[in-house]
Image (cartoon, rainbow, N blue to C red; front, side, top):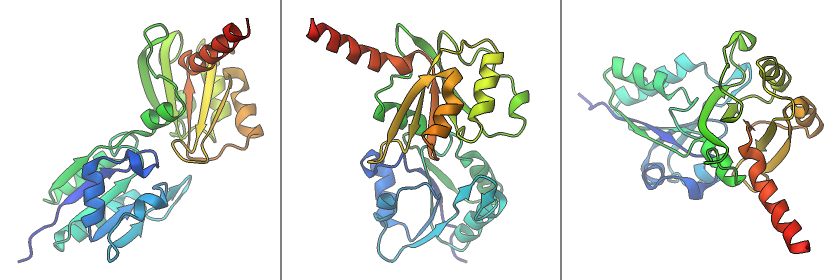
Length: 252
């Protein structure tokens, strides 16, 4: 009887191959089967060995190549057939990556799992944009939320954003108007600084800044597309303010 393979839940980070962990890179170079998300950068997929089978399970808003339950079944089926499977995810498998669901289904099926963490989209985007998510003078709390969940308006975001806090919103491009309205209704000031980071850690990255009240117009005017993160909090303005201060002092 053929031995059951292992499913490796691997974080691909925000896009730049240089930001992969050593473990992730080694698994990519040795795996015979890679099941990958649509947002994984082609340069990372190019690291796979020449004879590897690559299966895309790309997901877009309301349009999935495979539903999640079928992705889970695919991983289990291939592992039970004796193959080691690299399940390659953008960012980190356990931060809005549905890695927990895949791991649980593998456990139920008796399939061993190893989790290889990756630099999360939030950490990678903030670093690339030089935004410190925490800062002794500005933020001691960071929260991550998904911006396209069902019942967005009914969710309780009280206390997630405001002075001393940073809020990072994944998948919020399409719902930017609802997000801005929701946060202002919950008491956030319209002039709270916001940054939108598109294609983080990639050559085409853009960092767009403005006040919370202008977020919907900013996203529409600049034609922001996914992958993009929205960062809300005083930390988003600190780097710009520091640069401006240095320039002003130099001019005096």
